[in-house]
Length: 168
Image 1 (tube, rainbow, N blue to C red):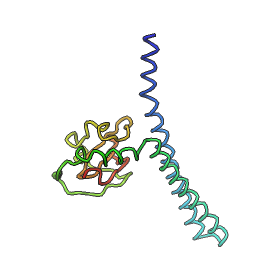
Image 2: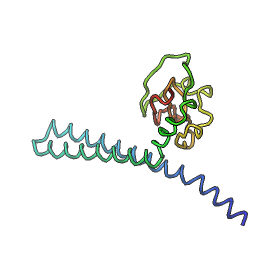
Image 3: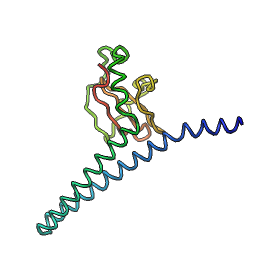
Image 4: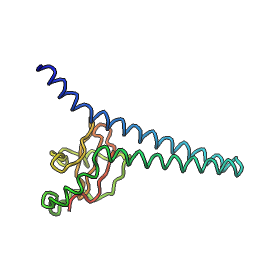
């Protein structure tokens, strides 16, 4: 019985991480597909006729729509919007004063590689569950950057996700 309970607890901790990794994989694949469709559209503009250009535009439009849908599904699956209602009801938790880092503010976007000084241990959010932030994957940490919160892949230094104006 004890082994069954331990196995169940292990499975319960692994499943959200696996689902999150799969949804991130889908989004990355859709971004690749969109870039490929954009390249094909550029080639059609250079070497194709009007019908080719029309078809490629349609493909690019479809790829963009699929990317938007996958991002929306990923956010829904992570419970991305659950924290906003919590934040409105618990304003004092998110009111951290005028917090400034020793470097200037940059509006980072997902996919950008940043220097380790921006995501050092000093800026880690030690208790993301307290703020109702989505769980993170392996080698990822939530980091505070002024009033924004960044999800960083600490192994590569890449910004995975950004929540702007998280703190009041």
